[in-house]
Image 1 (cartoon, helix red, strand yellow):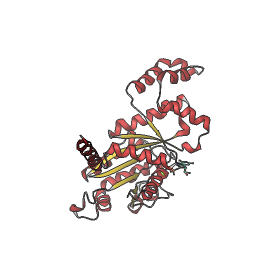
Image 2 (cartoon, rainbow, N blue to C red; image 1 turned 180 degrees about the vertical axis):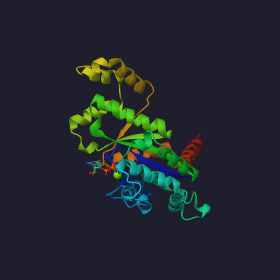
Image 3 (spheres, rainbow, N blue to C red; image 1 turned 30 degrees about the vertical axis):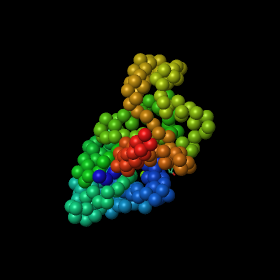
Image 4 (cartoon, rainbow, N blue to C red; image 1 turned 90 degrees about the vertical axis):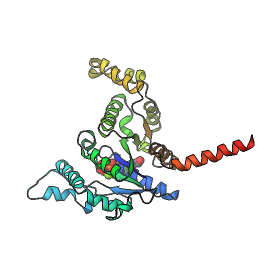
Length: 283
Ligand SMILES: Nc1nc2c(ncn2[C@@H]2O[C@H](COP(=O)(O)OP(=O)(O)OP(=O)(O)O)[C@@H](O)[C@H]2O)c(=O)[nH]1
Ligand SMILES: [Mg+2]
């Protein structure tokens, strides 16, 4: 079994930074996490990629083509469709050449896929799903990591829209899913306190804040209430704050995602068996 995190989120939400942080953290604990850049328009990132979509196709290729004449957004969609059509290229990159036997080797392959910031790729279009299906066919267990800038999560209205964006991705991708609030280090201490409230959202306080004083809030109070109750009652979305300056925060998040991916499950089982054996011995 191999493991993949698909890193998605709005433009500039900190996806590439997340990948660098995780790769660095893994290196510090002598663990191997690779990153693949799948953003054909990427200009700058600080991780060292295992492979890069720009070796296959660059956004400029789609935009400057005499016949295609795409703008940046259409061009991006074209590039990802091109990637799916040329899946053999990606397979070679990930699975070490054409050797079928290489699939699944080595056992603890753990790869982050740094995606473009156009969120519609994952809310409406099928490329996100197709990528997951490809990875699954190559023996990957996948999890979607949705990054959202925490600065957009410190008032009720933004919380609702951020949550809806996260839900759209969840509904379209149908994969195990983790929401990450990035850039927590940039928040003031007041804003951090405010954020706490949204980490364990409570529909009532949220709605109290939203329905008072704004025209929209008053007119659509019932709708807002219903959305709030939905989020609360079904624990539909939860957010994990990520402070890039705090190694413990990075480690905690990685552990959460490892659990979701059931990474290292065999190792855990062994430890547990060992503990039980010891307890048994004492009896
Ligand atoms: N202080 C701080 N800055 C951050 C953090 N994460 C990202 N940034 C900054 O936010 C900007 C955007 O970060 P990226 O990681 O490039 O975001 P992205 O989601 O990959 O952006 P696109 O690929 O363009 O969609 C950069 O200037 C980063 O340095 C963080 O946790 N703390
Ligand atoms: Mg990026």
